[in-house]
Length: 467
Image (cartoon, rainbow, N blue to C red; front, side, top):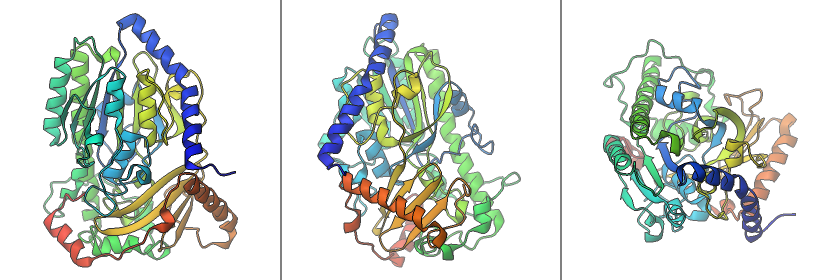
């Protein structure tokens, strides 16, 4: 039996409420030692896929994130709701999917209306926290959504974000009131500055993936090829191997820059005596194609390098561990509020604190849902359902994709039109439709638009950093 949206929220609220007890124990135990709740430090990069850490792939040089992961619960299956900056951030800060909070696309793009819901800042203030956010915001100017921050500078650049974070930690190291500090970085998003033949790169150790070598654009929706030939991939689509390898190294460099900032902030926590009473969360808003599938940046595709992100939570005194629990970034708000000892919130996410503490339980998702709306004025809605073994992508106009992740983890062979897999596809489609109905997702009402080649070339020529 399908649930209405109202019934879904009520049942979610009951579930989150049932998971509040482990948090209260955590808060009470900590209060007996330090007489205040844990501080919370939230670190977020921009456009870092889940493999872009040395602890996952030694190609990347991220010693500070690797060390942090050693002491954290690492969610190996972590996903964003959508691989676009603004809508993904709207989910991580409100707890709702983009179609519910209103920000389906990047700010000022088609479907990119400012979010109108309160963010976690407001909720944490109500829980007794001093709140601060420095760095990228990208969520519009709605007063309700922008409220909740005792201190804020909602812009970069990254060095300034770190300086503001260091200053905040120094000023609040002896405070009796717990703080929640959100540092929202821009790198490795600056991969958009890569210029073949001009950027300083080192490619001796760079390898290109099997999906780069075997990509067949004729077997996938045509918007993939269109993105590369007439949109943001135009500069590299026909380039030689060395140029593609240069992209990978340049991306690696940008990931390293973010890691350097993480190191400075962690060192400050330790030098100020905050390390043992501060929870540290490290994540990203979405991924980057990083040359996989002969694609770059982000666009109308839903490969793992787009929707799968780093995610770790470090609570002082708890041992590091890895979990296969399916995390979606709508879980951010309920999980943090759980850690803060606050009343549960009805939203699309659920608290994962029992996973971190080992106290209590939480049901793992049978599947993860991801959304895509468009970029700039080019609207290409997509819905994705991903299970442990399968991924199914449905486009409004451009067809379908079906990948057997268990046997084809690089998503090289699209099985959507193979008769032998029709039952699997039908089952996934039914589950996807049921989720959309339950969550009142208006996917089937959306209209695809054609790419304006003139606009695309203006973007390429005039603003390489266009998100």
